[in-house]
Image (tube, rainbow, N blue to C red; front, side):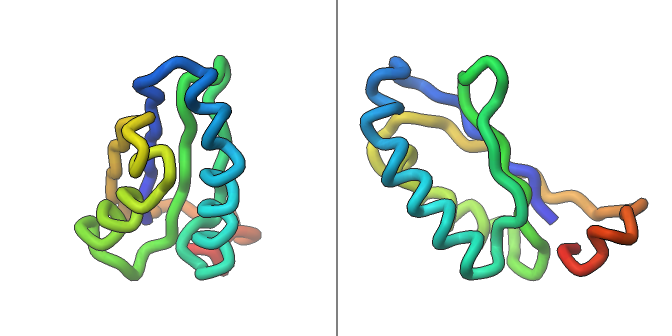
Length: 95
């Protein structure tokens, strides 16, 4: 699995101008089965994504570079791979 931290590098007005594109891209990644959870940080300085395993760190990093926020130079991404140890039974299908 992967934890992806997004940190905005530009003013929020620039982020908001691309948020609809970013959310559409997130929806594609959810539909493709990669992402299982997404959401903004509080306060809104970026966001977090949780992605399924099954791909390499390099593959997931390459996919993150396709996010409109990345394409337009609006955010930095930190992709961390982790092994899920203890899993809530209700989430087992997502791991």
